[in-house]
Length: 245
Image 1 (cartoon, rainbow, N blue to C red):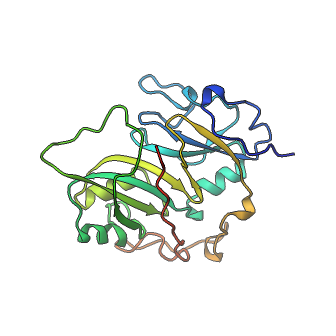
Image 2 (tube, rainbow, N blue to C red):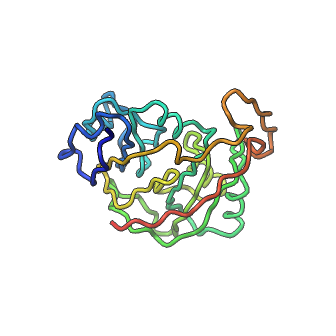
């Protein structure tokens, strides 16, 4: 029998029994500076310093200098469903960038950005008011003479440092990056270092289109075209709610 949904706890008070059935998904708010691995690191804290749950592993990753939602599970099928890029689960990021954003820059991000080694898929991008977030430690370094603003960026892929590279390419260097949602899962008030366990039914998640099913090959994208544009219909996105601190 699957364990019931549990409320949010700080890891120090979290019961080790919640993941015994391994049919659950762990939502974790990864703090800035934490490396997405359980093995020790000589310079940075790792997941081992925050999560005392046996047999769970990250479904995807989040850069050391980024914050926010990280999903973990001990169930291989669920981990594959979340991390495999063919499923194209939308990922929502709140991004503080340096400079004042123009409509041309927003359109460039929405259309797909040529990063040299690949062209990003079309994204949903809008300027937002500064979200209600926790204080980052260490704080962001600002230049008093340069303005900044916040963007909400939703992508359906997750290349290495992709969002940072996208904003830099259009002239908006990223100062702070927080992942607010992955597919239907959101931070929903989790503070840095906190986690929550929920039940997940694989049948409730989106299905692949015929062209994306395992064993089916797709034609590679040509240079200058949107990467993976022939792989199937674009996912429908929904902007994430802002979380209270």
